[in-house]
Image 1 (cartoon, rainbow, N blue to C red):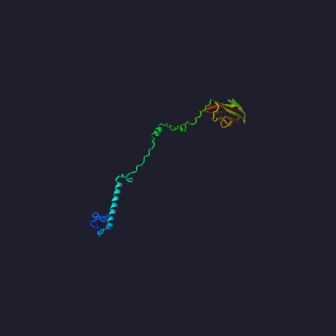
Image 2: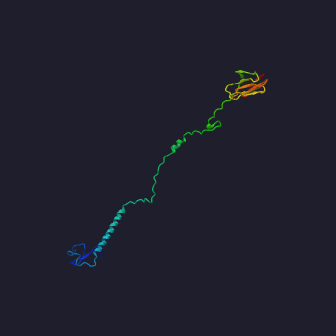
Image 3: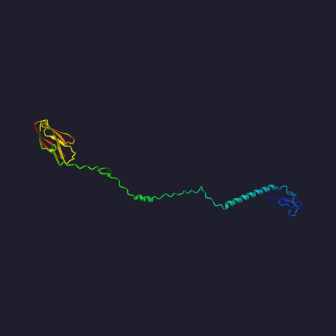
Length: 216
């Protein structure tokens, strides 16, 4: 079965293609489908099949043209994505600089004070070189007083500035008594109590001085 319908010539009774308008054998003009065309000839069906085959061929040719020279695309889903690397600054130079810095030693703690600092210096102890009992700024080694009389006396200490308390004592309180007049003990008052003789003693800084007191 041919795709193009055939017709019969009305003059010579020969078959020829339905595309021709005249018979190629006798030259007679074809009228309609031809006088003697086959009744079973389905020209429309054959033409539809031919068009479908032609369309398939065109589509296949187009696919071949599209895929022939097209480079293979990289599968972006299968290949891992490269993570851009970030260059970090090199700290080696900073490290070398830090290593050369001089670190001061920590403060030391000594027995004298905290943080290596010396505590307040202890003042030197003053030694008494001279000690005496005076009355009106005159040194007394003995004096006479009446019963009930009060005699003011002072202690003269050399060198000056000695800060220890002076101790005053009576060898016999029934003859006289002595009372200090200030906290430092640099001055005192002797009071006659009864007739007799007794010794007044002062002491400070390991030194002593005495005075004989007569009461009558």
